[in-house]
Image (cartoon, rainbow, N blue to C red; front, side, top):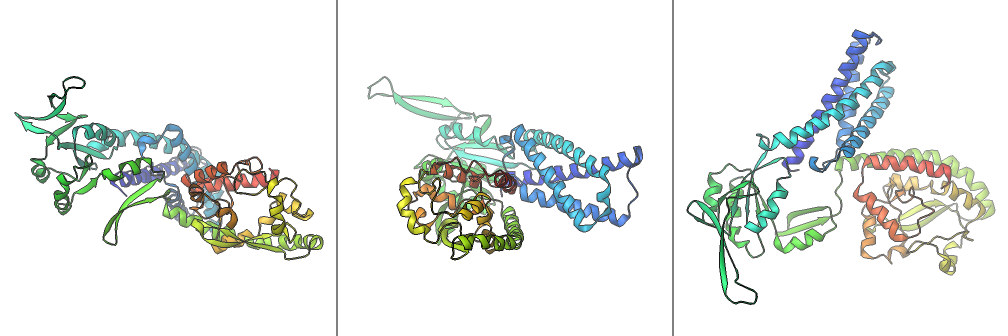
Length: 496
């Protein structure tokens, strides 16, 4: 985690914590001293309540924290995330208070008023904190003192963008394509005197700063500047072919304890055109490697997601058993054969697993599928048709009510699937995938997903399904999973 993220995360944690603390203090004082509506509770109850409040806040903060740069957050985004976190915090707080049987939960005045005040203080705190961070931090002791080694043209493009990072105080820049004469840094450029001429003219320009950042060095006095300057990190952004000019100094910079960020010109085009959201460099087998990977998700949130899957899978399996047994009677009378349909599916990044469903088709359904391919209404590799003759009468009912999906809770419990994810394809579908289709498998498949709650009966273009799945993967969060689960309930109840 870089300095900006550390400062931002720590600051947001304390802003939220102080908002929650003052919300309770204000509510308590108002309803005890002014209105006198809060009963006297034991000291132990208040201690337990305080611990539960703190645990609720810490859990929600670290599970739902967004590291998005402050400058990229719009007001609607700030309001939305604040309301979301406040509601989830109090939902978790309510559950923990009920489980612990804490008597303070009976105080509706404290609970309701502190919730409202918490929202107000959180919103106000975020906007005030944002202004402070942007205007004050870059010039404070908390900022990362930064130097830049570049050329004139590269610097004019790079430095304004680097200055948008409020956690950096860019002190100076070294321009390697300049000379130092008469107290100024100068660049000489050559160009033809007129079109088609072989005669070159020289133009000299004095460059004292790049976007307000003073020029203090060139190649001749580069290390002299660095050895005497106070710097936390250096950015090296040079055109292709100039890397050798500073390569000899990088090890010395590292020995000095300075963090070095260096552009790799040979990768520039790849990096700019890459669809990957996370790019890192590591030494693998003594070879420097640029690592391209899909969206990186909060590891704590992924652990919580798996914990929710285990609990949901266990509860779902237990609740499903009697429903499955009741369904089995008419199903097996209509179509004798196995109750549970087992089929190999493709899971995360191509892993093969067995998916379980209540059989809704006749036993020879797979053999009959080939003859029905011409009636496939899906544009792509998935198969779907109206009035599929392979589906039994009972099968139509359990599909309409999603009862056939209930055995998949066992897949969730085993870890093959998640409660929320992407639809796992069959092997024959997967074998037809193009490269970009496989990205939809970079997370565990799920019982439900964004595609299923976005008009699953209407979407017939497979590329649209892939687009929705990739949108889910790129924007995944626990909150998104919760919204999809609630929408799934609505879809099942309305049979859409």
